[in-house]
Image 1 (cartoon, one colour):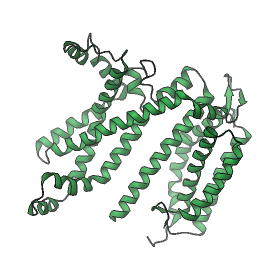
Image 2 (image 1 turned 30 degrees about the vertical axis):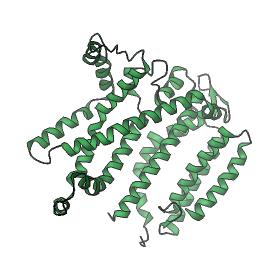
Image 3 (image 1 turned 180 degrees about the horizontal axis):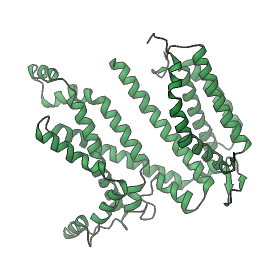
Amino acid sequence: MNLQWMAWTLPTAIFFGVIASLLVLFTILAIRYPETPRTGILRIETTRGDRLFITLLGSAFINAGWLALTGLPQWWALGICAVYAAAVFRWV
Amino acid sequence: MDKVQNNRAWFLVLPVLVLVAFSAVIPLMTVVNYSLQDTFGNNVFFWEGLGWFEDVLTSSRVHAAFGRQLAFSAIILAIQIPLGIAIALCMPKRGVWASVCLVLMALPLLIPWNVVGTIWQILGRTDIGLLGYALEGLGITWNYARNPVHAWITVVVMDVWHWTSLVALLAYAGLQSIPQAYYQAAKIDQASRWKVFRYIELPKMQGVLLIAILLRFMDSFMIYTEPFVVTGGGPGSSTSFLSIDLVKTALGQFDLGPAAAFSIMYFLVILLVSWVFYTVMTNLDKAEGR
């Protein structure tokens, strides 16, 4: 299969690989350990999948904001994202 | 909500996932790949890193288009939602006239975007268009091709003409589902017309109105064809909304990298707004115990 038209690069392949494995991991978790939705500080019911979505979407905006507003290395934004992810999974 | 969910049901969604992968996920992945590279054609790409994203996020042109887009969506929502509710309240509840009204209201919704654009483009012309000619007769030199205010008014009125019916029909459906007992109770309490609207009709319409707001927001936020046909994004760039600006970048200038970065940011904003609406709606449903 010729995928040249998709213009793949190693970084984007890793990026999508990580997201795909996260989805697979959370699917397996959801099947192995079914859960009941809980209500956190946002006052909305969330499951693990919802919290993953909030984490990924929020991380995208954190990275965009970091890029737009600071001139600092992009890796640091990833650190903020990790803190944000932990917060989302703990309190949301 | 103490019932354990059976997540195995998700496997039933698999066929849809495959279809969506073909129509949306794979193209989106390609856009992500493009957004980090530069090309001069011939399928040859050069690594660019986050440069395009930085350009897009700090570009005054993109900021201006985003501002115009927000203004446009806000204006049409502020007009269409109250107007739609008002029309729904005035529509007959049953009988032949109810059907006539429904059919008439549905008509603008059936007309394709580019035809709507053409209709209004001709209507606004002073030489052959009824609207432009009439305004000229009133002493207003109407020119949507040269005057930004006229262009905006034309585009907004066109959208209101095209889509207010949708809001009205949804609100009408919401109104029809209110049981008569509520009105009877209000009558016994001698509630005023305003109180009936405020405490019975509006709360009962909440669900459909949220859907109406979501649909109208999404549709207006992605609007392309109508303003493109009428004004082409002009005069200057005064009606270049996000999608028009995006197409100019991608196909007009053939800047695939910046356009890809632009589309990803556009997509993220839409994803965020849809998620907020979806969450509010589902929580509303749960709160009402539906």
